[in-house]
Image (cartoon, rainbow, N blue to C red; front, side, top):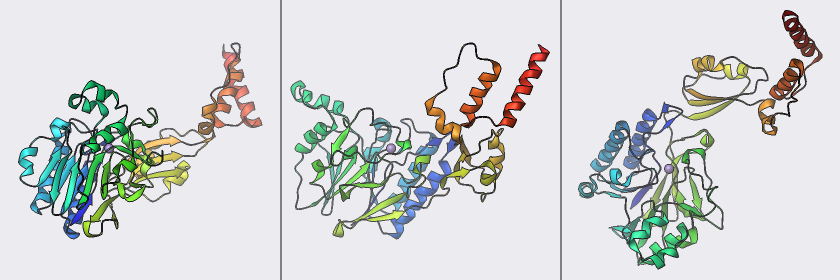
Length: 375
Ligand SMILES: [Mn+2]
């Protein structure tokens, strides 16, 4: 049996008001083509189908088409909810979908929903936090569950895993190995750094599973072994991901340890262009989604207008100059009786990261002199 693992589709996502609509439609078709070409039997999507708990119409329609395409090819689809999904909305129609081999699991009621296909058991665990267990256990037991790791221990202790079969878990969680958290990127918009390892689950808890299909982290990566994996998003969703290679995972249950990563080619790539304004304006024009990092020392008035003529999907611009790199040190203390010349001098140094030249110094002094005469 051949299985495809993807996750974190985040359908309906925008970045700085730039819509990923065409990109997402395109990449879902790409995944559908892979399913066809590779003769995939099962598609697993552990969470974050939608970007927002109330997905927009375009996002719902595109997911509808994707499921219909897969269903027409008799592919079995396994879906669990992520932290971005609304459980109620995602579960709409799920009972009817079951009859068409589309299984959507958005809640946990004391037992992980298990779907057996041939000799493989799939365990579908939606995104959970410890408080989701509260209605399932008594207060005393609940008090012992202090973090996600305790929660996972509790959940897995209740499962009887049949080791004579192959077992695959779908989960939307932070999984760590040896105290190390997975490598994150900006588009996840969840900060574990503030909460430490409270939300993290030790990968060793998952040893009974032959493969663990993870969602939540957007950078593709394995945790401890090749077969515990974040597939990552199908598209780059932030500029921190420009160097990532996005892919889907292909698993063959006859040779489960030998996973295959298939790179996804997007409709538009996402790139950072860095250089002086002149250098950037001499780079090859493109339709990619672009962030420009300008290295000019001098101020350039509204460069974005011109940049957009060459790179129509440029959506972000920053100045990376000496001023920028010194900015963390903050402004020097300003004396209350500082003269206009002293104030300007301070401003210039902060802005440019250097002292004024003799010529510049003379120039500003002459301007201030002229102003004073006019008083
Ligand atoms: Mn996500």
